[in-house]
Image (cartoon, rainbow, N blue to C red; front, side, top):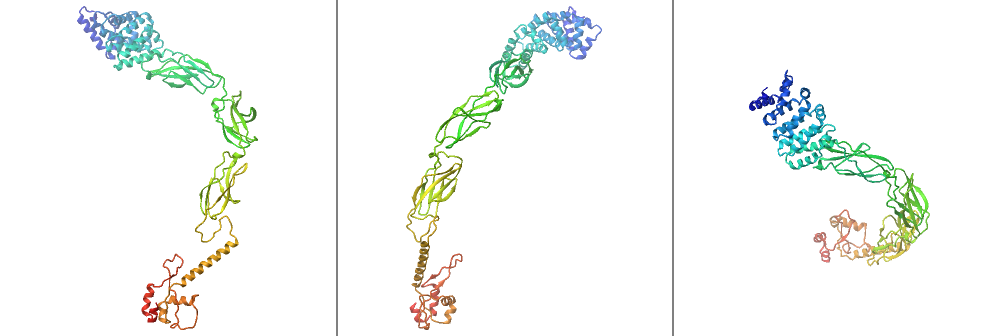
Length: 593
């Protein structure tokens, strides 16, 4: 065949033709099904002369293409010696310094390991396989970018099979080399991705170390574990925590606190690595047992209110999730059992006035009683329950503004206040101030405040005060809270009559105008003459003297224009209406006016 020609140029071109034929699948099929395929395949292996780099490179590519399919692997191995094939492959990887031969040799190995059958062929020749892997590790240290990538690709093709990490990590240098590649080729994404994939696949079949138990309590356990084999990027790594083979948490940290566990119970916990390429095998289980249940103590024991003979105490509710066998609370008074309750508060009665008591409370469970929490409480004295005396911020002639303060301690349940003025209740309510009006000026009042609770009535000290003197008093008025006497009513009627009489006398002294007895004047001022007939003046002496010889005083009444106000009568001496009447009067009357 031309592959074995003594002419190097002819042998090289023949190898190139075969490489181009196998680029397509149909070309591979023609060679593998040729009636002389046995001779052709053996000639390919024999012609892999390491002294001719071009011919060896093209023949390595041709073999890689032929064994990429499953049938090609079987035909090649059946027609050629298996160890002979791996020996030729090792020579191309280990001895030849040409990088192109290294790349095609790595490509041929990756094509062989595309199936389980090819991988089994590798591990059957275990010694040669170890030597091939060591040779690939040396190629990874090359300075050629493509050669490094082909070497990584061949290793990832092997690492996907179970148990492959045993062979890949045989030299114990591969992990260090991968770390070195990630730092060296940091700007080349293809090498970074392939190295991360290989890193994960190596650890995928390596169990993580067992998680460690840092602390154990009755309902919680703190665990920690080792990181993911010094990964270059911790953001790509996640840790899955499995409690009794059930995933409960995924975190990027290397420690975690397991909560909500049952007391005195057995658990097992595992750790599993997770990356963007997949997840590792779970670690071996770490078995632990939680502690016995601890009965918690009472939290925030405090006094709600106190009275003379009773006190009310309360505390925070217990979290049932932390105490599964909870029954209730036991209270003590001076270390003597008082009462059992399931509520978060209790009222203790039948106590002595102004006495200090030590009250304790503890939690009771099915396993017993917990620690006690204590508090000292003092009952109220009788003086503490009295409201303060009232004060008077505003004192007027007929009003008082009254304020008072609540007592320091209210005995019992508060109901209302009552304000007592001169023995009479003038206010009842919950406010602490009141404005009293309609009082009598320059009068002394006695005022007290009464606090009413379910324990009884508590009266403050009585305070006396006096309203201001009324300097502008015209008519007496009785107080809103004092009924008027008979003398006051009589005095009021006399004063009213005196006022009316004085007003009538003043009206008689107003200058008037006299009119002669004539019908024309009646037509001019009909209202005046009608009023004079119907309502004669009390100060005019009635007689039958003629109107011409008798001077009559007639008041001029002008009604007000405001219909909404009571009728007002104005007595005018020289009004405009009188001036219009003067020309019609006799001269004697005009002179008089």
